[in-house]
Amino acid sequence: MQVYTAGPFFNDVQEAHAFALAQQLRDLGFGVYAPVEEKFREGEPGRGAVEIFDRNILWMTYSDVCLFQLDYPMTPGCELHVCDGKEPTPISLPDMGTVWELGFAFALKKWRAVTLIGYYTGPVPKVNLMIAQSLDGIAENITDVFLPSGELNLSALVAYNGKQI
Image (cartoon, rainbow, N blue to C red; front, side):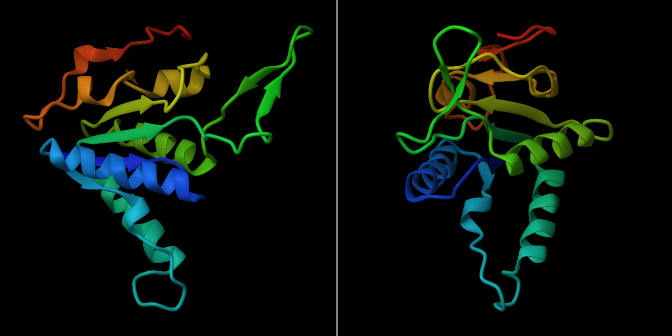
């Protein structure tokens, strides 16, 4: 079973997480397409932005599962906050590229079976309706969903049923 992993990798912490996740899934018996492993190197054959974009599209198209990191851990002191008239509440938004990949993968579901799973590296917040409805569910713990047999336990996903959590 092939898994496409989508999430931010703009700093060392995010990159280390993305590499560790790919290895964790491989150790459980899954094939993994991990964009973090595709380093952008302009001028190097096959490593330019267009080639990497095209390859990621191909990988999503042929994956059985697309796994989306839906939070974008911010550097301390740079967090975003929502003010609703009370105390400011810190929020974490998904990376824009990850959201684009989720939309593309959701469109793929019109033509083929693909399972779309979201996860957070921190607490699960209220989830935007459009993101929630695009996913098959949220994995609260990756190892509860991705089993050592290389199979999925979809009953471990938090389902939405049209509601935000």
